[in-house]
Image (cartoon, rainbow, N blue to C red; front, top):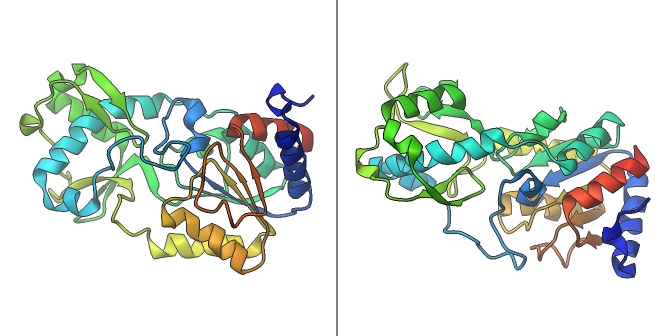
Length: 285
C-alpha cells in the first residue's frame, strides 16, 4: 500500500515516475546528503531554500593555523559527538542497503560523515567527506578511533562533559553554554605529538583526488543517478549531477527543498527521504 504521504496527485505521479525510473535502471549510482540522516536525529545544514540554518562550519585553514580554533572545535565536538555516536540508521539508510543487496544500487556516494550507511549494511560506499568516527594526525598520518580520542578528551577535560547544550549541528558541533575554550586541553598525536583533526573534509579543504576519481569511475559504470536528501549547494556533490547530465545519464532527485540542480534533473520528488525510499524498497525489492 502507498504511504499517506502521496495523496497529492502531483506527488503521486512523481512517485510513480520515480518507481519507473528505478525499474529502468540496472546499475544505480546514489548520492546522499544531510537530508538522508535527519530522521536519525542528525540535523541538516540548510533550510528548504538552500540557505544556511547555522553559522558556517570551521574552515580548514582556521583549524590548521589556530590553536584557539582547535580548542574551540574539540571542546564543542566533545559534547556533540555523543549524538552522532548514538544515532541509528533510519528507513532511508535501510532501504538503500536493501536496494544494494538486490543488485539495484551499483554504488553509493555520501556527503554525510556519520557512517550510518555502513551501519545500515551498505557495503559499496564512498564517504566523500570522510568519517567523524576517525581521527587523523596531520603530521604523521596515523589514524585512531574517535572513541579512543573521546576518552582522552574527556579524561583531560572532565568539567566540559557536563556543559549544557543549546544547539546541535549536523557535523557533531554544538553550542555549549558557559564553556571556557581557553582552558580546554586538546591531546596531541601519541606517535609524533602532531596536530589531530577529525577524519572529515573541512570547508576549504579539497576532497582527496583518489576518492573523487574512484567515485566518478563508479558513476561512469552506472545507468542513472539518484540524489537523496541533498541541496547540492556544495560543489563536491553538485559535480556528480553535472557529470551525469554531461554524459547523458538520467538524474532523479528526492529532496524536501530547493536544490542547485532543480533545473537540470529529469525528475524530482518533494517528500521526506525515508517515506519515499521505504515505500520504493517495499515495492521493488
